Image (cartoon, rainbow, N blue to C red; front, side, top):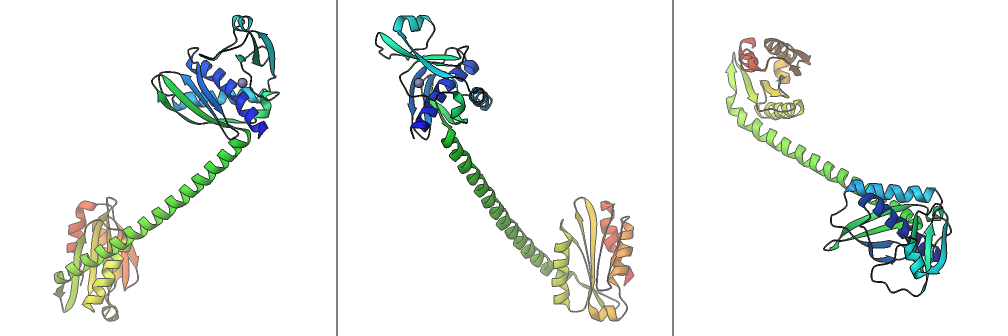
Length: 305
Ligand SMILES: [Zn+2]
């Protein structure tokens, strides 16, 4: 725990150094909190940090951690320390002799500080900003994690994103099932509304219909329903799906027995739109190229009976 606090404390100094590099020398510490699991740093700056700036700050601090810089202190008369460029806290009262905490040789950071620190920056392990926000006019707050806190943070973030991905997958699956159910319901209603259009040609019930854009599975669903209802019929459905004409033909078994063939019918119909297809005598499908000729193709059906 003491180690965790020391890591966060030294990281606070590196954070101030990085903020001054990225945002400018106007950045001044206005408060800080060093806990075992995280650190908090309040500073003067007018605007919110961009994602890029936060990434730069993370990058600089972690680079300094990897360089494993020496962390050491020196007791100096206050005046001498300030003249040498050590950063004092705004409004803080200091005695005649102060402790200056220094990082790196040449000196990267020199700040008046009485806190407990690590011996070298490598001990911090890893640094990551977890939040940045406003706490008043011209005042920003950064919260960050290091070492063990960073390890725990990364682990929990990963767990969260896996869970979120799983939830999203489940949602999507539910949505897909719902869409499919709606599509089937629509297919059933459309199919039932078409039944009255059936005509008798040479003693055979024929139903030809143009369907609003639908997938082949949906056309099949419709033809199943129509076949069930009409008992004995030739059914040819046409649609324009993904900008291309498509057909499905179905012939009930009694008419297949009389020599009617859905494969042959659909092949000739699709020929009109520059396409081809085939299947079994009871059920066949086809695609084509020229969607403008869909009506003309469907008109051909009756002459084929
Ligand atoms: Zn310190």
